[in-house]
Amino acid sequence: MALWVEAETGIRPQEIQALKPSNLTQDEGHWVFKINDSYSELTKTLNGHLKARRKGKSCLTSPITQQLHDQLQVFKQKHAKFIKDKGLQTTSELYFLNLTDYPLARLGYPVTQRSMNDMLKEICRRIGVNNDDLPLSCYTLRTTCGTRLARLGDYSYACNRLGNSLAVYMRYYVKTFNTGYSGLMDRYF
Image (cartoon, rainbow, N blue to C red; front, side, top):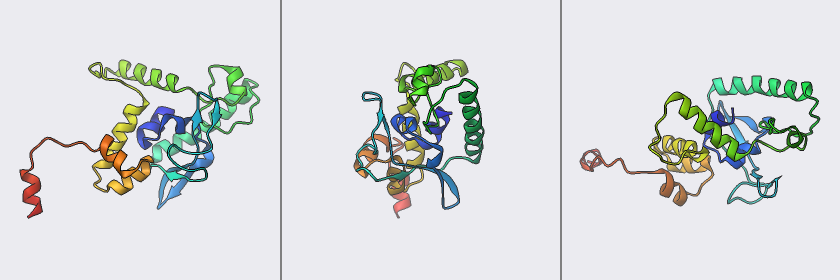
């Protein structure tokens, strides 16, 4: 589920680790996450803010599909049942607790970035994705989402939804199509 959220929204892995059901909201008739926190694996705590943003600031993600929204509701119920059945008393409201290590789950620790990256690699291996030895991680999904947003043509919207400045967004997500400029020049006229 964490990878599905990443694929549709492009939010950073640290933001996925801090994601709670209360972050899910509607924006102009579409389901989005209103994120305002991230997780530090170094300190094993929530940061209380997003990267490059002051405490108290938040941003909205790209919209998610109705299918993902519905599956998140099912996931939330199954997650709560699993925690109850295993006797994992935790006060954490995180979507993605580290349920492979019960003591960490009791402490409210989320899944690790490494486990998300390993799962992505395993899924890609199973379905036959050939990445030509290019790095494959959650940031690959973030880049894909950033590219999809770039195709909309509104870079202000795109960089806002990814939580980047326009300069950073243009540098990392907007690539030339290498198709020549003749078509663009014709469209200009």
